[in-house]
Image 1 (cartoon, one colour):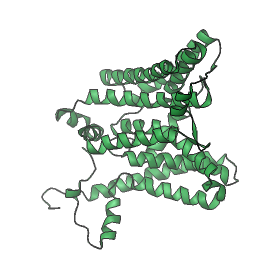
Image 2 (cartoon, one colour):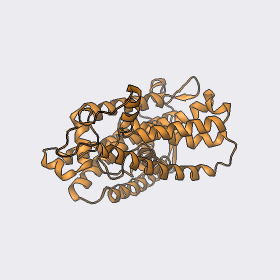
Image 3 (cartoon, rainbow, N blue to C red):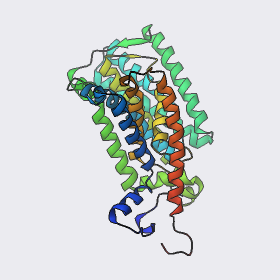
Image 4 (cartoon, rainbow, N blue to C red):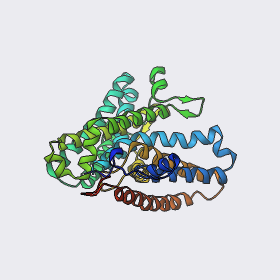
Length: 350
């Protein structure tokens, strides 16, 4: 059902405690992601010069990682449960335009715009979850449809209501401080939102029965249902969480940049999946961790921004990302096979 190996199931590893600790790290889903993150960090520290580690350079890749990470963590949970969500890009744009229209174009309270914007994310997530669980249509197809459908509605309604595709907003100081300010003039407050999301979801995945349910559903949905796990309700909740995460980033961007555009967010569609895959989550589900997704997000952000500090042509960034994805998948498969090779065999004492 899941390939995560409990401590009691692992065999005794000979050698010193340091050797056992190092060996035990290979059981973890995030082992490959940790190697990848350290590798790209050292690489760009060497070739990116002092500016890469300067406050401005560190802020550049941390800010990218924070916004992407808020979306990638719930998307990673969905992928651990064996599902995809491609609609996050359009949800971000729809929530962003909702806030801008309600609180900017119509002049309503900013808090009302934020609530409605987050409600858009919840609604699209709920729609995705209901369609996927009720029809058994592959989530790739369902969320691809809502990706285009939501984008079309956002563009059409924005033109009908405002006559334009971009709307300005003047947020109040409290909203600005909570969602869209820069700490020390460089670090987005979104970094704290990212940490909060990662810590909360990580605790849920590792410490509660819901985390075991998510891993079980991704490992074998039929067995999980037979064991009494409410698989449909669980997946619907995960889709709602994914939509909420995308809407939260839409709110953050709108307040940070004092405006919204209908084209916002499309880069997050595949970037979030890239971060999750690089973080060690299997596309087939049942294997992964929040720590791995965080590391995968950091790896993506460092490569995405680090290329600009090397003096090389930024066109190579896409090539490096492509190589990184392939290497990550191969490395993750290796660690997964390694973990499975230590699973207790029938009739053999661990």
